[in-house]
Amino acid sequence: MTTQTLAPPRKTGPAYDGVPDYLIDVYDWAYVNPSQVDRLDHNVVVKTLLFCNDQRLMRAYLNEIEPGSRVWQVAHVYGDLVSRVADKVGPNGAFDLTDITPAQVAHGEAKLAGKPWASVIRADAAKHTADQPYDLICSFFLLHEVPDYKKRDIVDHMLAQLPEGGKAVFVDYHRPALWQPIRWILKVVNAWLEPFANALWQHEIQHYATHADQFSWDKRTYFGGVYQCVIVRRKTNS
Image (cartoon, rainbow, N blue to C red; front, top):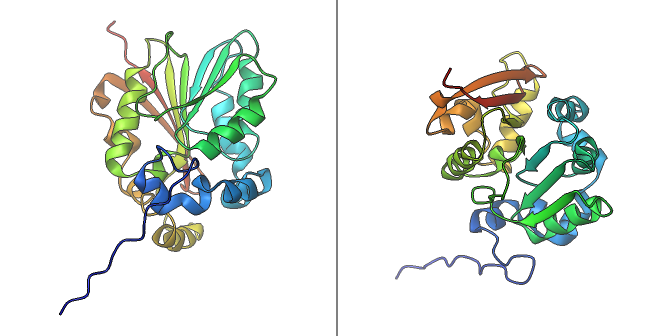
């Protein structure tokens, strides 16, 4: 007689409605459960998780934003980044923030209240479209949190939305140099908590773009290769 192990029942309720299974299974503790989100959404948490590289990585994104431009950030992140992005865009521009998770949408709305040029939209990062093209689209530490098929869907969709002259910004993890001691800490963390992150150690972000040759890719790395910022622009025909 064999014993069949049953999978635990899927969590239900408003906080979980419409949230992908992989996100609930892997990241309920970090991004889905509202009580956990309340505990973690603080600047000090971001600084700790990024080994005090939070400000330089945020600046890598913020420095690419022109006041008065149209910006789409494909997922909410903890700390004050989304407020700073909205302030940099300013009332003469537009800032759209999307997220698929109700708890993240709620936090984004609270941070952007009082900024009428900023909108929070519940949407899949691989499906959201707008009536007008964006000047800049940013994925800030999202790709390492999604499976490979979703990485490709998100990258392809972001690049498909780029008009000529627009740019995409990807800030995320990268393969650390062999001499970087943080490498070994992250190996343990990834094995325990971040099962989709190692893919960014093995592949460049452009690996996930179906038509990568139609774009230019400018990569900068930080902190001994632990992090990367990739600026992508559509190539012109001239």
